[in-house]
Image (tube, rainbow, N blue to C red; front, side, top):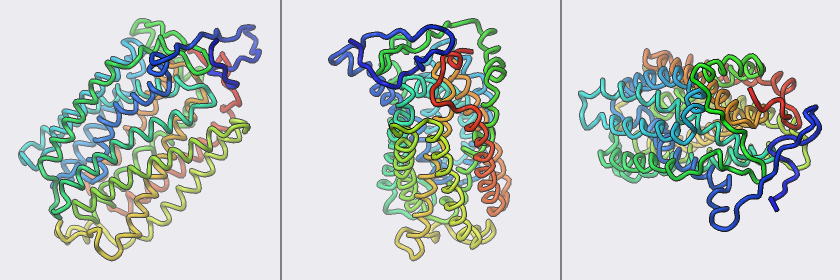
Length: 465
């Protein structure tokens, strides 16, 4: 008999259709373990561990560990500009060619970008770094859309936050490992850039990550823990898939209320990575801070998993509780950050030689590193909440591919704007203020969406476009 779970992937209550989802028997033994949704989401996590996770380790250190932070910022502008455009259409690509192939094509760009990031090896390669950023943007749009559609479609309604947390924990271990490698290989230097071996290690791991999608189960063969299968992606024409973007917005316009939250979700990285970590600390301390930042993400995602998947609590209550926690964290952490930001400017930082920046052995480090840790916790809470809100709107991987495409597109547009503002040397305080304001505004816009759209169960009419 199929494993029975009380809360199913689809609401089996009478919704006017007169039908309930068909229940299938899950395979047992090693095949059952391998094809279990948890295993597949874990494999998805390891793809992102090896690729965007290691990319995050470089970004979190500030400027990709490069001497020239401006080149790193311009590469990010190119990256997120193409990412924004590609992600908008990536849901259509995902539904047309399949999530596994979309995921694998997307992973390839990270290895190229890691190779280009060795700017300190070839100082004249600035144009290559920026071009690699643009190519990575196209690939990242594919990878993150496929990732989002699978991560949100595989669990049942009562498991979604848990699966998001599993993915987020494994993914962020990539940032932890990458930062640990950077810290270990640079622990005896206070210079302003990485040793060459750091980039080589990152490149090898990224190449391994590109192979994992080949071994994942085809989504059409997946059976959830409650015995339901994913809705069949009909592999329609490109015209129909592009039209699906419009239909997704028209039939579920409440997603628009999440757009400000999408916009803010990568905007805050610029201040955190370049204008706090990159500005204040020497290279080995930046690597240590980055390791702690990505480690704290695991804690943040697990906290939200507990809150958003609480048993015997209505989903609407969980949604409002999660919103309140994230809203409180935004003001606590940014209020704390303001006490440090008012102490320095771009001009004052420019007067400090790279080797004279703050080290982890210096007085004043402890308070600043704890702030960075709490920013990591907040980031994980934010991203987990956004994914969970989208997952509360549908269980259909085709529809979720469009939703996550919107998410990554708008998120990347915000990131492109933020990194461009950094590249043109916008004052640190202005960047910090915009980060705080956008975070608060994003949550305020999301509140009516939660009230009007999040139901205690997702009914079948919400499943298809």
